[in-house]
Length: 285
Length: 150
Image 1 (cartoon, one colour):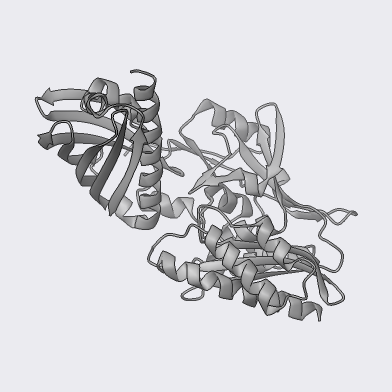
Image 2: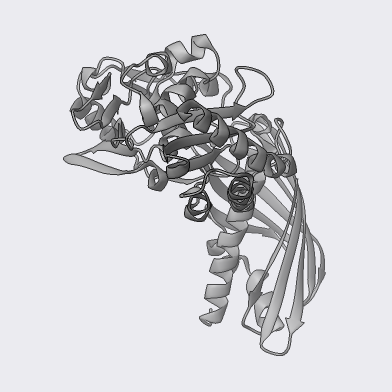
């Protein structure tokens, strides 16, 4: 085993320079996943660039217009208790609160989770349902793109080797919206077998805003305009809910793994969609 | 895990066979293939790099063609290991070519692959999706080159 360098830059620019200098270097956020993978011999970076000292990557800020910026190094435990994540944005707070176990939530960060892009990670469907955008720092500038476009394939993102995730941005949620994250897992603390993130608003008895994203059932969260059109304007009756659930299950691309078979996941999606949307609606009523 | 897939090439079967059994022309179509050597009349050695998220691996493969029925069938065995021996791989593969009229060929392949070692920790489901995606990349590259007259 060769010696591994460890860097602790104070600024984003400093971290970017270290990344540019060594293509085999790996960014270290909270280490909840990366260190476990290093211990298992799955990754052997030549150097670690820790983001721990970079103050600009931390914290949650809510703007006057209702948008929220979550720094990439914000830990799950801080996201899970943030009062800035209210209304429709609560979907992200709820997802944070059920990631793994308390020790992992004390270490793990949103940027680290999104960069690793495990399809079963709780944040991904929540961020996609919240229409979140990702802010990426790169040599000489910045770029921003929707999380839904950032996630490309199994464990594959649009992040270039010389780039780092600086923050996640949640646009203002619709007035009076609620957010809800429903996770189906074998035991508490496990990855999701399947999950559903919902952002919902009602106007009287009719649905006036809906975003539904299914997690852990494909390379990236499944969100479908057709399924949302089925629910929009409806009173969230059984017919609309089963149509949306069926369309999402058809669009999913699940795998067989230790948590369940692909077939089970396809069957459970419609039920989980119905349960998640009804739970969200119950909070409005 | 078992991978079964196929694709169609708009070229006569003899041309497809000649292409697929010529390592110099076929190797550039294999995603991540760094090098291929002919080590015997029916034996090859190759280096192939694969990546899944932050996990990168380079396998040294030994491919032995056990049976050939030109121009329609080939059976081969692939044994591989990483340089660090952290993972090993054993694959038994069958390639079949079927004529579709005189100007097109259906290529079918199946592979029974066992991966042991550090990749055993990874979900087989995701590995299978990755293998299918690599297969699709290979198919696209083969069709494109043969149809372009390579």
